[in-house]
Image 1 (spheres, rainbow, N blue to C red):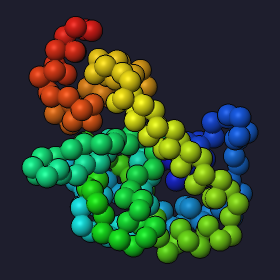
Image 2 (image 1 turned 90 degrees about the vertical axis):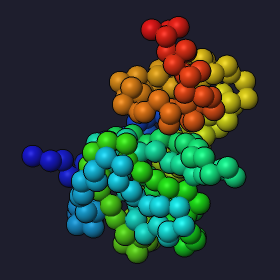
Image 3 (image 1 turned 90 degrees about the horizontal axis):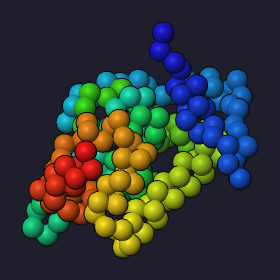
Image 4 (image 1 turned 60 degrees about the vertical axis):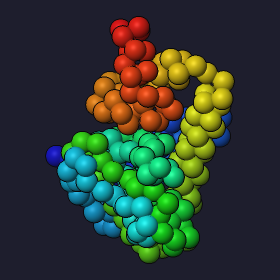
Amino acid sequence: MNSTIATLIENSVNIENNLNKGLKLTIGEKQFFNEHFKREVIKKNGYFIKEGEREKYLYFIEDGIVRYWTTNMKLREITFWFSFSNEFANSYFSLMQNEPSAFTVQTLCDSVVWKIKMSDLALIYDESLNTNKIARIVMEDIFTRKIKREISLLKLSPEDRYQELIKYHKKLIYSIPLKYLASYLGITPQALSRIRRRIS
């Protein structure tokens, strides 16, 4: 039997740290999530959203890998972020500000996701303290990962950046095509191949 979306979300954010001592959704909150999130299977290379479209949903990845990418002035694809199982995904600024998305969000494998409309999300934000806590926890995690990535690009060698990545997602990294992973690391696929050979 599939887990409910409420249980999946509760488990995904229920990691204790200095500011978060655990989170327990109320019966009403669980009911709202289970009624308003819709489960969907998106095939490999399917899209959450394409650049230029307006985001309408917040997604939660039950199982899968998602990449975020845009194009540079030479129209080359630049991969700048990944989301994995038990993480949220969407074009956040497009969703919040109703603007065209500046990037594309695309699956790298067949993925099981749950999605909720922005209008439904707004309802629960107004009434639920726990939903606001979840949003804070998720944004803090994204912010922390973003800062770590920026620092690693400034201070670490490509090999060290790759080592940092596989430390947290070792089993999943080899599911990501080499060219996308190299783009994320800011190096060529050939350079990444050499790094992999050295540390294998």
